Length: 116
Image (cartoon, rainbow, N blue to C red):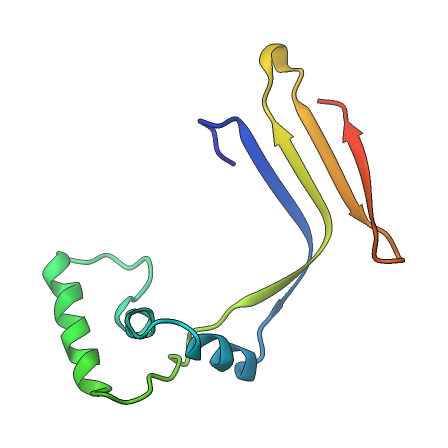
């Protein structure tokens, strides 16, 4: 949801974790700095300051000096197999535009306009 733009996208469907092999393949294609960052960042945990983050980077760089960086054990991703995708755009007088795409059994998409 982007409030300032008056836009929203909603995706509904099956979500599955990536296999370890797919995770490793994707991770190998990332820039080295991003690979190291995955080891450095304890995502969403409170940091005392920027220096602590940069010190952790130095530690990780020493752990993998010139070596291939494997994905951390906790690192991975997900695939989404959408069944529906809804696009919403705000309009004056609350007469918003809403479009719903629904995946059919023949793998084509049905498009419907929804009432606001």
